[in-house]
Image (tube, rainbow, N blue to C red; front, side, top):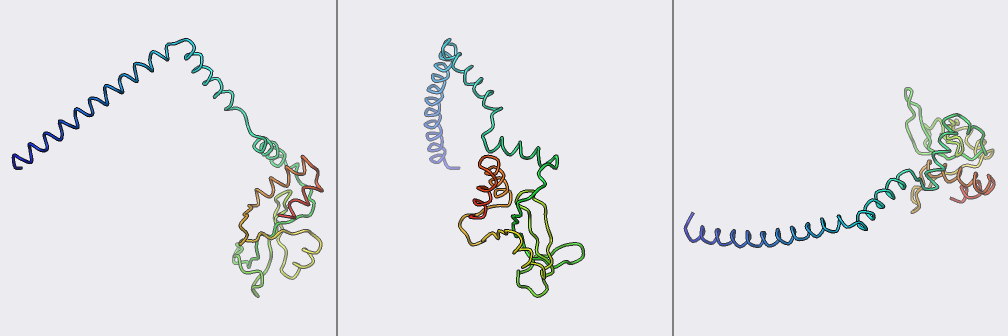
Length: 179
């Protein structure tokens, strides 16, 4: 390396080192100030209060979480079993081996439609030839994939059950059918 380049490199390094030393001194000053403040009784009380608040908040759940935990306990124990007859259409299928392969609703090879009960989340397979009879007997919801508002089955289920508990089944049915 040539001497001029070495000199320039050394000068630039020494300049950056001085700048870093100034930053380090400023940082050390801030750390000293922090230590002084942390030892002040009112600041120690404030820090302890923040920790206590954090611990107290940790056990709290918002209303939706609390509801979901309660609902999950009922569902896990098999208590949510009856239905209002509202089903979510989840697709049309043809059976290959033991699996259902999703096809278009009007596909001539289609064998069955799958519906999920909005209340119990139980799945019902309806032969394509019985589709009209099933849909005339039950309220069905078909999620519009092109809609800007997207709902998952679990969001619909959660909202339906929450509304049913808080406002009654009739309002819950009306609301879910509007979605």
